[in-house]
Amino acid sequence: MHRFCEKQIAPDIQECLNEMEPWGKDGVRQQTETDIILRERRHLIMVECKLGKPGEMVRAWCRSKPGMRRQYRDFMKELDVNLFSDSFNYDEDGNRFYQLFRNYLLGAALSSRWKTDFSLLVIVNAVNTNLDGKSHPEEFRSFQSLLSDSSNTLLVTWQKILDRLGPEAGLDALQAWLSNHPLLQLHDQR
Image 1 (tube, rainbow, N blue to C red):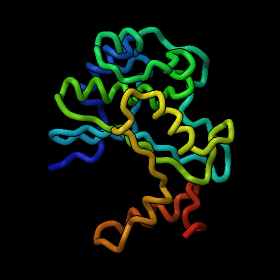
Image 2 (tube, helix red, strand yellow):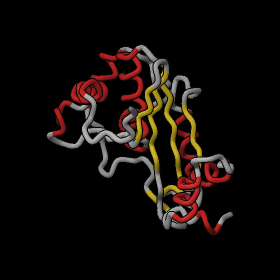
Image 3 (tube, rainbow, N blue to C red):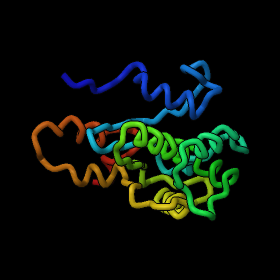
Image 4 (cartoon, rainbow, N blue to C red):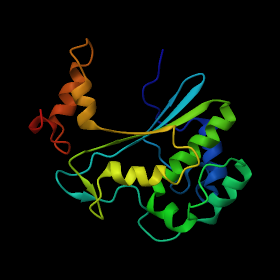
């Protein structure tokens, strides 16, 4: 039987989070909350989703307060992988792409432990823009430009997902949910 929703964090993921974000050990304080983690035998997909608000500029992936915790830098050194390009500014870019940074780092750490490849998939609402007026795809490309290798990253919109859903059996509920979600306003765009 497959579990579709875990109520507790799997012990091996929690252990990794405790190393990456020791201030929140075992959930005492907030740690990275990846929206969805899909794990196959040879591949891991970290999924970050943004529903947004109809027609508004939203804070995409930035941290709510300035600065970055030094523990992430320490964790990256211990992990000993080259995730980011030389142009990556830890404090500025880490803060600007805070959610993406943490999901990418956690994905790299888990893939190292589980001896798998990993990807980061971001799903956004195409009717929103980022706080500075850039589209989410444009802002995501800026994040990708800071990676050593961005080939394992992908952005897709809820709108594109709905457009790609065909009449296959079992997808009616998903189509209805996407079409009628008030934040996505997809029913107006079909």
